[in-house]
Length: 315
Image 1 (cartoon, one colour):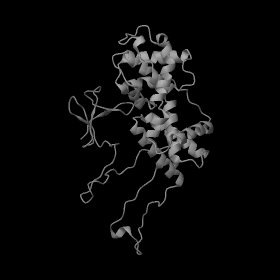
Image 2 (tube, rainbow, N blue to C red):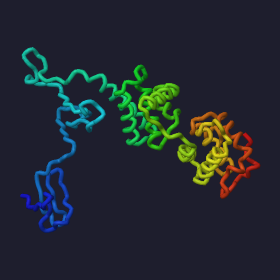
Image 3 (cartoon, one colour):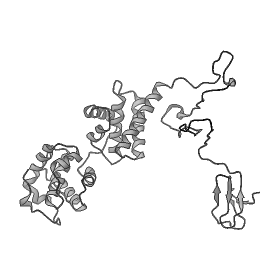
Image 4 (spheres, rainbow, N blue to C red):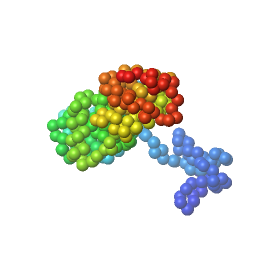
């Protein structure tokens, strides 16, 4: 028998130890005082997932009796009841037709949204993106879908472009090649949808800079923080001095990493850096050739050279 007290705010507490944090026994449905063991409250409702397992069911069947969490992006908030297949006589009428049936068809709009959300989630999992980015990409796709401004475009291409925009807006940009690597569509098609979505939603994204990729590229290459710091300084100075006009931030970042690594003890080849950055060796070489003549101006003053500037490769 429970023997507890309630405060003015209907809070249950132990009468002998009012400040003690009660422990919930979910199996018995009791709330117990950890200091004296008194059952303060019983018949506590478990708000977790409701499960059921019957001995005649297959072991791989899902025991959950409730569906996924509510999705506000779907029409009707995705609230529905699924009716299992009937087995007894009570499940059928005189003509043998099931008395209770699921809705046979989902609306085409909800089906397209569900498929796109699944595709975005799969792509995000493959490149380790957080749930906040996935949620923003889902919202962007929902806005594009409702606006019906990109009719005729592949939903996979729109989903990929939405994920790219979400990464940019969340401050963790990915390159088109990284998105393309986990997508089913070409880089060119993703780029087209990217421009159309920005125009349709009247939104914008911050310009990408060399610093957006530097830490990730250096980390994937296994370079120490001193080389990353030097490469960041080199790329920033190269842009400020207008040494690399017209070059993409990714190629400038890759060339800066190559220059910094060649001057350090941890040397990396252009091919190794190109594989991580997603740019060709010749692209890195062209940017590096522009930066090499003014290398002395680009390195930070406190950088400890393992290889002097005069002995750095010229291309």
